[in-house]
Length: 592
Image (cartoon, rainbow, N blue to C red):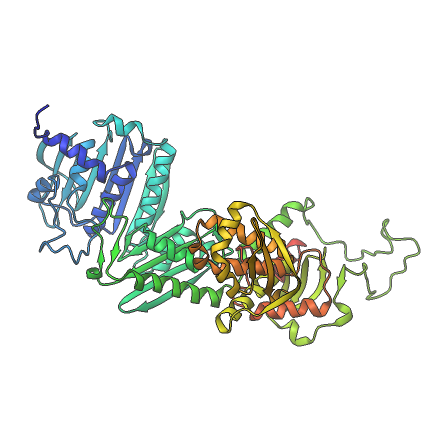
C-alpha cells in the first residue's frame, strides 16, 4: 500500500487520544480553560458519566468572533503570547483541548467578551465545523460536548461504568477547585447536585476544609517551609488519620495539580517511620516556585513535571514533613476517641431518660443487698482492677502531665490514666514499641547501636529465598547491632544482638528481617529502609500485651511517651493511645 496523507479529521481524532482519554480528561481541559480566563464561578454538569453530555459554564473573559473561530483550530492559543515555553504561567498552553474534544464529540460553544454588544456561537460535529453565528449570551463562555467518543467507538467501548467515570470527574474538579479558592465550583450529574463550593477568596485553608472536611482539619497540621526560592505550604494529616490508598493526596506545583513520582516518593519517605506500607497519609501540599525552574510540558495530560533541581524539591518536602511530624505526631487522631464514644453509645441499648427521684434510696431499692445500711457518703469499692495504681499513688505533678497519672491496667494490655480533664487509654505494646524504636535510631545516629555478645550463639535456619536476601546485607545489619555469620548452607549464626533489646528471640527476629529484605527484592532496599529493620527489632523487644505492669512501670511508660517523638502512633501507624474528655464521658451517662 503506498504512503498517503491521512484525512485531517482522522489526524485530529488520532491526536485527540493523547489529550482526551476519558470524560474526566475533557472536563479537566475545559475547567482549566475557564480558570485561565479568570472565571470566578464555574458550573459543570454531566450526564451518563460524561459520555452523553459535558457542560461547563464560566463567567470568565469570554472570546470575540476572531478568537472563537481560532479556538477550535489545533495549536491555536492565547496563553503563550511571546512563544516562551520556559515561563508558563497558565494551566493550558498547547492549544489542543478544544480541537481534540471537537474531533471526538459534538461540540458547541457560546461566548461573549467583555464590552461586546452580543455573543457568538459555533458548533463542530465530530470535527466538521458548522459555521459561526451571533447569539445572546452574557459575559463568559458555555461549552457543551455531547456524544463523547461517538465518532471513535473503540474508545467508547473501553470506558468504565457511569459510576466510575462520574467518580473520576468528581476527583478532577475537586483537584482543580482545591487550588483555586477564589472561584466557586459546582458539579451536578443526572442524579442531582454533587457539590457546590462557595468562593473563599484567598483563604486556602477554608477551601481545603470544604473538600476534605472539618475532620481532616482537626487531624492535620500546618506546613510552611521554604528553601532557595521554593516554598512549600499546606496541610498534612496525622499518621493515625490515614487511608488504605493514596487517592486523597493533593499535590500542586504553581497551582497545577500533579501526580508525580517525585512527590509520591517524598511523602512516602517522610511518613516511613510512622505508617506501615499499606497505609497512606492524607495531604494537601502546594509548591510555589519560579516557572523557569520547572518544566510542565512533559506529559500529554500535564500531570507530571520536571524540576531543574529535583533533589532540592524532594529534600524540602521530606524535610518539612519529617520536622512537622516530629513536633506534631505525639498527637493521636481525635477521630479515634470519637469512634470510641460512638461505639459505646451504639452498644448502650438503654438510653438515659430522667434522673432518679430526689428521695430515691439504695436501702429501699428491691435490688439492695440484704442487711444493707445506707450511711452518708459511703465509700464504695468494686474490687481492685488487674493492676491497681492506688497503692503507689502518683505524685500530684503527674496528674497534670499531658498523659496523666496511671490508675489501672486492664487485661494486662491497656493502661488507664487520669488526666486533668478526662482519661487516657494506652496500648502498652504499641507505646513501648515507638519508645524503643526512637532510642535505637538515636543510638545509631550518635554512636552506633550498642551490641551484646550472646553467651551461646543462636543458629537460625533459612530457606534459599530468605538466605539470598540476607547474605548481601550482613555488613549493614552488623552496623545496626545484629552480628550474623554464615553457618553452612541455609543457616546463619547469631553472635551479637542490639544491647537495648535485652533478651530477644533471635530466630524470630532474624526470620522477620530476612522476610523484609526478600520483599525489597535486593540488598539496596535495606539501605533505603534501615529504619524498618530497627522497627522490627523494636517490635521484638517491646512490652508485650499480656504482661502485668506495676504502677511505677506504667507511669514511667507514660512519661517516656511524652518525651518521645511520634509517640501518638506505633511504627505501623496504629494509635498508641485514645483520650476521652470528661465532657464526652458525661454525655454517655446523660449528665450533659
